[in-house]
Length: 510
Image (cartoon, rainbow, N blue to C red; front, side, top):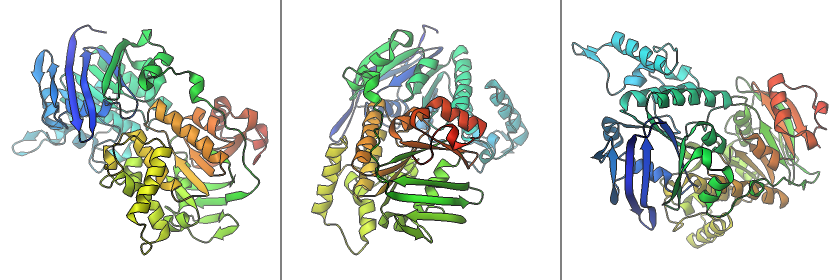
């Protein structure tokens, strides 16, 4: 790790109506290092990045790059200066080729026309720098999310003079893909690039970073060498109180009854998910485990009626459903928190209050308008219950941190008083404090009698929350685990081997 300062922020402040997002925050990035920017949702990480990249103008402070004061006026301006950012949501054009995505906005020209030969050759050289050997003429859509992420990074690296910001780049990657990304990051670090790494995965911080800067409530807590800061100390600094690992881990106690709230019998959709049979009892938490692409979300979409099944039976309570759609699902007592809260969850231009009452209003129907006073009562109830951090329920939801947005989506469905709640990656992209709160809420809701179907890439999360875990592989149900056999080793073994008899691991449906 080099000691040369590459990027320096001094006493940066930024205020929004009712919120001081940053208060005299300083940050230093050196050449040849990976530097983690840590903090709970709402700590100021995203605001700091947006100030740095010209999305927001700072109220006060100074930014220096290679010893020269700079002030980016837009993300494009930041790239010109030498600061490139790759966000969690890949901002590329899936219908264009890899090469076109790498050079969009700066296509090489020859005699007034696009120089395709040069662009393709330059693209191949650029990707080989990151150990990627791809057909750059193929559409971006032909490649996995992980490869698309690498292509976005390659583009950012080519446009940067030394600073690369990676904002939650691993949230949609499996373990092997994460290591592939880390290999690229190490290569870039060794070449002298400074990398700012934003993530909520603590293990990844200790795997790849050299130093850590921690923010809390818009203020700087401190800067630390990764090797000298324990995990417990890191989390304690983030949340502002002493934290012990057992605070996060609270095993679910079996509280369910024999009453079946929802069941499927060989429910399937051609090209999407092969036959799945399972049941969820009142007060039971059932987990769906599997690698990315295993069919977990596709199955959830069938239950909620986003997609239609080709065959099989879906039963809600004692009623066999002939067809399903989201409106009917809501009326039948099903709530659904989708995997991508920004695209399929929140309505960004609406307020917190409007987002919370959205599903309840749909359940009641357009002609049974919920009075404003009642909307306010419902919203305040769940803001208090879920401890949603906001100066007002009339704040636009897209001004909230990711963890608080997730809580608003939970509030939306809890307001409908559901019998079954489907949670698809409920803690993805949120900090450890909010993650612990949501896990505890899941356990408390189940204890109160709510049935929950949970999908999570974090196996330990499901093990702590679920009574049973159904395992999917290659869009097919391969087994079920419960009881003392419900551990990461057994789940991964079932995923790797494609299952086996359920009795090998547990009693099905216990």
